[in-house]
Length: 225
Image (cartoon, rainbow, N blue to C red):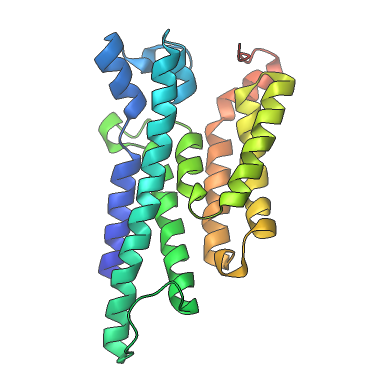
């Protein structure tokens, strides 16, 4: 199990570390997105290069890599459960109908999502200087807690509509998300490991917005137009 878990961690991190924003701007604009605006490789800063289309593409691809990491975690959970059963002599194949398998699958998928977010924030390809992880987190946790993600996105939209601050909407949604998961998700998806991984992801997202927090307090944060 340890070896297969390490594979989940490594593959999910590498998926998350694909710097789509950097690559798209380099390919289509001939620019280094890190030299624009906030220097971030995420969708918002990509849009500041003059192409909202590239910003949207970055948003979707960053979310997709988070979702792909979680899907990989679920897939690997089947192999881990099968090996554990072989060691104990249990006859039943892996099935999400088995409560123990179901819980194991979601815990490993949560780990995969967390590692993908870490990969986006600290990509090995860009000397560990990446984005803030919001879109990747949305994609990763959409498969784990879809109802909570929907409510968090509604909250994000409301905050941005009222303030025009994307950063504030992202932080409020991130702060609320662990509570939304605990409140809206079934018990097998709210075990201590899952909630800890989700809470850690939310905290990292907020910490990565520290420059935005300083600008918000100073009244110099850019508003979305």
